[in-house]
Length: 454
Image (cartoon, rainbow, N blue to C red):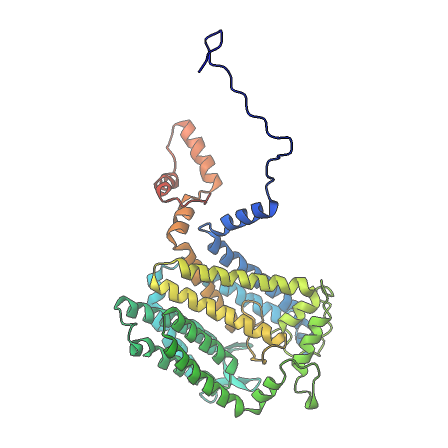
């Protein structure tokens, strides 16, 4: 290379770009997509989605229960906040259960599977005892626990099937027994059919459908062969058709799918007025508390059809927000089930996700007129303490499983309270003491730090 007079190498000038060539512009849509994808891939994404989504659904549900139940309470000569106060109390107890479940180790969850199943079966059998069981809207699935409080044991049967079924399949997978069809079905399917029989003795087919969905979800996650899966599905469908054909009430509900007129005898009154409530809401609704259908026109406005009141008062924006929260909750549950190496966690997370997603789809589909009215509440949203308590415990399960992921555990270990850093810095500068113990734990967890988490 030739040198200059000073002995230094000459400075190389950058090549000029052609006048017509310009650097490619950064696409904002692609940049947003990459940032969103990076955020979705972080270890704590599922944890925050489950915790935040469930709390938002519960809080919004409390608001809508208060709005939708005022008129019903006044018609029963009760205070306007009567149903809200009961739901708020159930939410507080459910929050404690969710916190306890989220802090329990996986081994303790597995140890509780059999006691919860035994307790659920005992209570579901106790419902059929004369003088103990209480009939509500033609279904005898309740037990009076004193005063205005009643308990629906079939709701706890969902949680029992999820925990017990997940523990059973996980133990059989460890012993490599799931390759045999008899170990795949026995005793999971007979116990599930026993629970279904106890539920159907009271006439609650909606809860039976949810329990059947949980059973199929567990079989699907366990890798049941297509022929075996189809066989169990055919048996369940045959039993369902017989139960529907032999009940005039269920046949009338089936005939109300897509109805726009109450029909003779007002058999489709509830379904049609649910559509009226959604149609009158518009884009942003008539305003919170301004529903017209809850003034005696729409039955069960604060329980099974609370989604219709939400659409009337909060409009399309409110209903889409509720759907987005349930979609985020379902995505997070699938992610937890797909990323774990523990078989029990995979089956339990998949079972809980199937339970909440299927129940939400059945409830919302009935309100929209796409499915028959099954009489199941919207999870975490509708009024009903018996449904809220086991559901919040199940959400606590998902939170515990999301926290138990290795990458999430390392990310949580690296987190440190701000006041801890300040106090450690002050004590370190004064020379009286060294850093606190959590700083040492943070350095230890640095080797297991996951990429992309800050």
